[in-house]
Image (cartoon, rainbow, N blue to C red):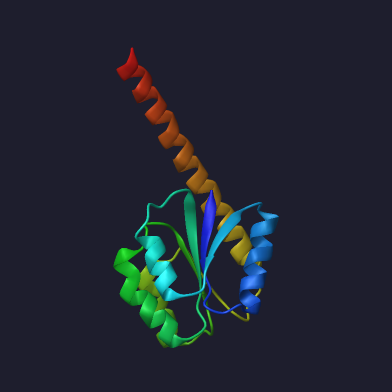
Length: 140
């Protein structure tokens, strides 16, 4: 399974996220522009299991909110630039599984991603088992 990262700028936060993903042995698709991210949402989800948005400013957050209805129904982790009330309120429009801030300790993000990935693997494996059983029943 892979993780989608949207990070318009190569920021310190993205390096930290990539390090966490390496520790978790997870691959990532990285998108830097809203246009490319939008184009990705027009394609099948594939093996994506979680989306991580590294938000650098209000403008990017506002653009992502406008794209919300086109996004995959996947768990979202947000990395917000600051613990500003307005930004946090806007971030909650995504119903994220996890929110952290650029200047925080990312140990909680590591645990959250481990849990999200594990849950998504379990759902994926169960879906595969059901499909296999259905196939056998229909084939017999």
